[in-house]
Image (tube, rainbow, N blue to C red):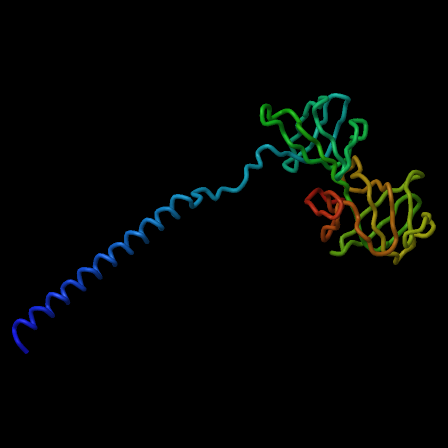
Length: 227
C-alpha cells in the first residue's frame, strides 16, 4: 500500500474518532443536564405530617363553653368551645348539648391557639363478644381475645335481633352481641345505647380486636377499652 493511501486512511480514521468524541460528549452533556433537572425536582423532605395540632381522650366534664378531656397519659386539659367550633359524632354534625362525660373524642386544635378547639369529634365505642352472664341491667361478655367486658343497659337502651326490634329478654348466655354507647364515668364499662344480637353488620366505630373501636362508620381507631 502506498504512503499516500495510508495517510488518507489515517486522516479518515482520525476524523471519525473526532466525530465520535463530539457526539459522545454531547450525549454525556445531555445526560448530565437531564439528571440535574431530575435532581432539582426531587423532594428533599420526607418528614411525617405534624400531629401536634391534634389531641384526644375521654371527656370528664362539659359546660356550655368548654370541654375537659383526660388524655392517655393521665393529664387533663380544658378546651374552650365557641360558636366557631365544629362538633361531630362520626360523620354527623351535632350540637354542644350532645357532648357528655364518658365520650371518647378527638380534638383538632386551632393553628392560632393550641388551647382552642377548632373541632371536636365524638367517636362511638363498640363492644362485641359472647354473652357470659345477664344480671339485671348488666350484661357481661367475653370478647374476641377472651377478656371479660361489662355492658350496662337501662330503659333507654334499644335492642335488635337480625334487624328486627328485640328486648333484653332476647339476650341470653351464649348469644353473640354488639353494643354501642359511651364509656361509663368509671372508665371500665360501656353504657349501651343500643344492643344487637348476632354478628355486627357495620357498627359505627368498627371493631378493634380485644375491645371497643372508636371512629366514624366503618372506621377503626384507637381508644381506651372498657375492661
